Image (tube, rainbow, N blue to C red; front, side):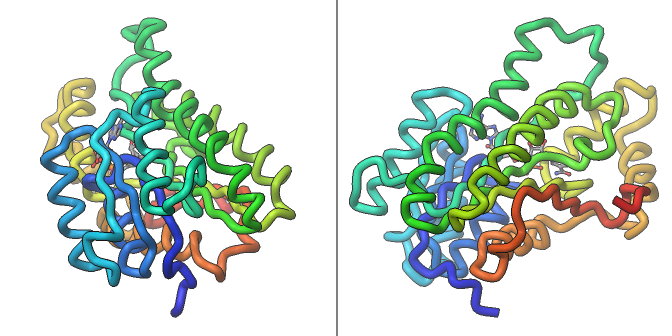
Length: 270
Ligand code: NAD
């Protein structure tokens, strides 16, 4: 299927590995020019080299920016890289994939105000700031795609993911209003909600959950897999392909949605 992404400029946050990387890879394969952002230069450079190898535009179509996207300085450097690819000032991306590391797992009694603010900053306010910096330029061009990587925990909150449940629900409520407000413009905003996908984040989460329950990380892993009707964890590649489809020319009528990818784990109908 031709996705119509050739030459589009994408900004993908949290993209050196895991779900963000998978989104960047699928966009790059489709011919989009991609700015990837993550904090660790070394991992990011490896990711950029892999993207350059699959992109029809090669290394010239990929820029890696090693910054913390949850800071104003980091966002400004990421947007400057978009300008560099576009050869224009304050252009903003055609495609924005918002993503950052998830907040820690734990018990809410242990979380003070600073811990909450960090989670809200990374998983709610950072996407909102980037939407604010990009959406009006997309509207002016009559086309744009914004994907927020949130979590299945928005629909089915898990106790130990309280920081994630709280911060991401705030973003979800915000997006629901804006997506409809701009719906006539050709710009869509959707949230992609991962269930359990085999990434570093998932694997480190088993160890953290095990500490709370007294089980081993392996016991948590097996139990979590058995809870998923598919009987397996998701492959990040499946996530990236769905992201690219939502960014494609075929997905212009999908807007303001929370799209759950969890192998059937969510037990409800809606
Ligand atoms: P991951 O840890 O494998 O990768 C996260 C990526 O984001 C890395 O490239 C990391 O360098 C980058 N990153 C983190 N914080 C950043 C920051 N402040 N600035 C710039 N880059 C940053 O994680 P993942 O499994 O790919 O998860 C991505 C998101 O999806 C996370 O928010 C996670 O909580 C959420 N999520 C994941 C799962 C899952 O099963 N993997 C399930 C539910 C929700």
